[in-house]
Length: 270
Ligand code: DGL
Image (tube, rainbow, N blue to C red; front, side, top):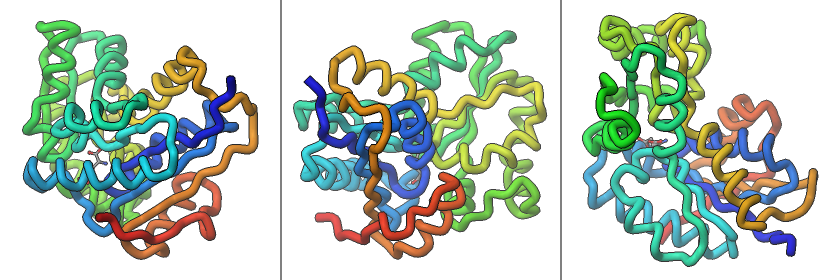
């Protein structure tokens, strides 16, 4: 039977939109409820306990919308709090680390893989663990890029943005020198900086988008479980944020190439 309930997706801010963009392309009939905790972004520089506390509040909020599945579209949360969240809701809960790790392992030719993410994600070694399970001989180089999330939230994402290019060069230079041929964007915010990152890394380096890769997996898995809504088109997405609607709407509309104004509500989390 068709399952019309929405899919819940959350992130600390705008990053999870990389998941929403791909999910709505793959499953245009599905309804989505999105939460961006924009009032408390970034999560990546916070302590493990704080991230777990915020993640539980985010998940509880979405669970109030009778969702059929939950996507944690935040590498930081997945890296430190997935095990806490996965058992609480009795619905499929998806994380964003496994699928990009598999993709990177398939794409690399020289076995030298770069991982960029927030401080919490890199500290957790979640990607190293996932990659080494696939092949323990991979040469993995990880870099925390703390300033990427604020750049995205500020909307400084154009390939011509000099500040963004300077920051990216400083973080990514060592990866270039290490000879990585595949780079995992291990934070869902980073694909919004795709052009900036690609400009620094050059055309030879394959960039793996954790949100988009996971969206492919989610679409397949929901289909296998017979949990899709059965509609080909017409799904809608509601957006909830915990800070001003305006800042979120501007960047979101630009990134999604569709006007989200009127679809975004501000909420308080408990
Ligand atoms: N987009 C998130 C991630 O994938 C978190 C960014 C942050 O809040 O620091 O890690």
